[in-house]
Image 1: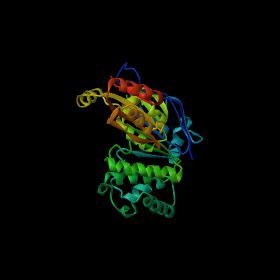
Image 2: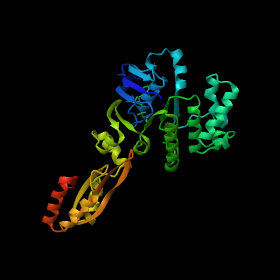
Image 3: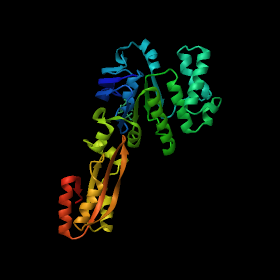
Image 4: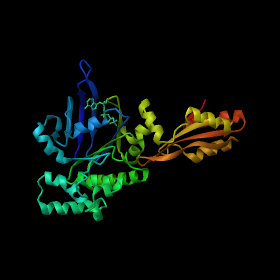
Length: 342
Ligand SMILES: Nc1ncnc2c1ncn2[C@@H]1O[C@H](COP(=O)(O)OP(=O)(O)OP(=O)(O)O)[C@@H](O)[C@H]1O
């Protein structure tokens, strides 16, 4: 069980070219990842996610702040000790980074050779790992004979070889089709649940965060602009960056152009209601409308699962006499999070 603490972490690269200002890739980022947690770091390209992850496993050195992995201060370790520390930190990559000249078993065995594990123990461990990731029958296959999902399974087996307390995942599912992504995410969940391995993953896909993470940090321009429990951040985003991400993965209000199209087809009053974790009693909503003689059709949105809790936005068309509709809206506004679409 390993906690990962990033405290005021910064990374500046020297500017390219004479007199060019330095590039601040990571700026004063603090993230406290509890042991056994799955923490997602999300951001657009250039936000600083990959740089931050490379600082955590010591591939690059921070220029400010401290990074603790368990009780080891990665930022204070001399270069000669960083490699050994990396044995406790597994990493998987978008492009898998496997050795094409080695078969599957040899790929998984490689970190064990580097760690000086005796042959018999290596063989036992490789067999165990390949069974765990469901590739026992592919031990002798070469990596170019594998599908993307299978390659990432090999990557996961290799990352787990030295029994790390932390697994870092760099866009681990971005190169995979949706179904294969789901399978790999399910395997990561299993890694976390069965071995208690802390997972820090970076992604630009909100769907990945929704699927797997306990907590999330949103990065923008090198900074952590929002952070918290996935449900809280998703259901009540505070920054425009987070709102843009949320709209890609969750039922949202119709965008302006879509709203225009909806209006062509629906002449009644359009309202959007937000449902957070069963806070609204849906039968009561429909009963309130019926009692006031207001008809309703659902024109957009849905309810989905976020971190094991329900969240949704439904856009409704309210149909009927104008005054009745106004009264119904006033009644519902008392009980629910309701917005009338102008
Ligand atoms: N070695 C480097 N030298 C100079 N600048 C760099 C270096 N590595 C990254 N940067 C800059 O740091 C910023 C953050 O890059 P980083 O790759 O960490 O972002 P990211 O969020 O991971 O994006 P992506 O998903 O596209 O990799 C960018 O402006 C990038 O150009």
